[in-house]
Length: 243
Image (cartoon, rainbow, N blue to C red):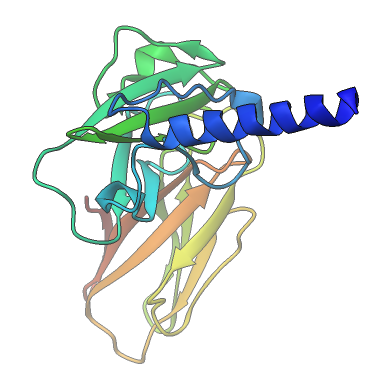
């Protein structure tokens, strides 16, 4: 009988605590979520209980630019939501590198002086509107080496039918590089992804400027895409990259 009485009292206590949590004033609780608890590959929301069904319960996400940062990049956060937001909304940013909070950075950008290759970067965003608040923790970003550069060089020219070029990259220590042509790929153009050799079978009698996109990606996911132009005249072939 005494055990049953204890169980009833415990249930009543838990019920009272739950009701107090739901109606206990307008103070936004300080939600703490350990980095180890964050699901990998997607954003994680730690919603406080004062938000109710308000506008802060909209679907939120945190995107980064660039998506695969290198050690020479500035990481910028883009907060996105689906729906109509209140006019008094505000954001508080807390950046972490290898689980250590960067106290000197409070905005939406993290300068590259605070991280290096293979560091792990995360961002916690507190989204507030009046007395409502929501916390979001981003997915983890693993910093790559310096972003590879990309240039082009003409190797051989046959003004009748083919031009042979090579994509060249440097400034990276991350091993294997993979070259690619980005759509729209010009007709008759092929690429060897391993060595960056491009062969372009020109239309008969072609003269003019051909524009195309090429990219290089290192083993850690850092990628750069650049536009190039090849100008074919009666006596020469001139190549250049454009920004």
